[in-house]
Length: 101
Image 1 (cartoon, rainbow, N blue to C red):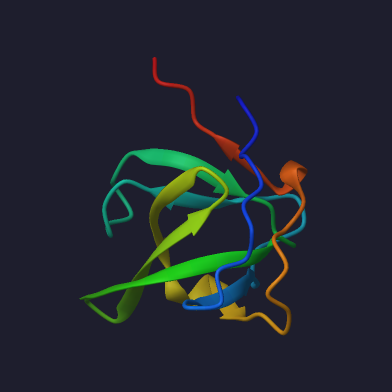
Image 2: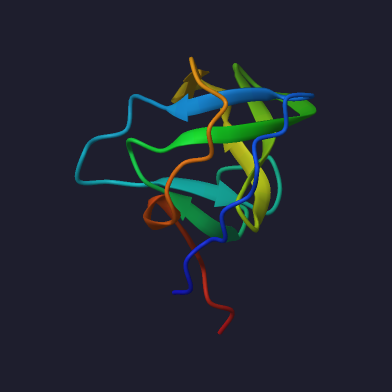
């Protein structure tokens, strides 16, 4: 899987860190705000600098947020995000794109 590219922090959007994800797991970034949607990338359980683009969608009890992280763009369940104290981009090793097969 190719690694996500770093991007400068954008102070016009809210920044988040991944939380409530086990250290042996990843947070899937999906093409649509749906847990059955195609996975377009993964975020490490300690990733920070995740940028919320402003898109939100309520699906049942969950609020999904549209995010970008490096070159990854997609949707994650908001319960796995927490406000980021810094606006620095996370290191490159924190995200991976899913290969199209």
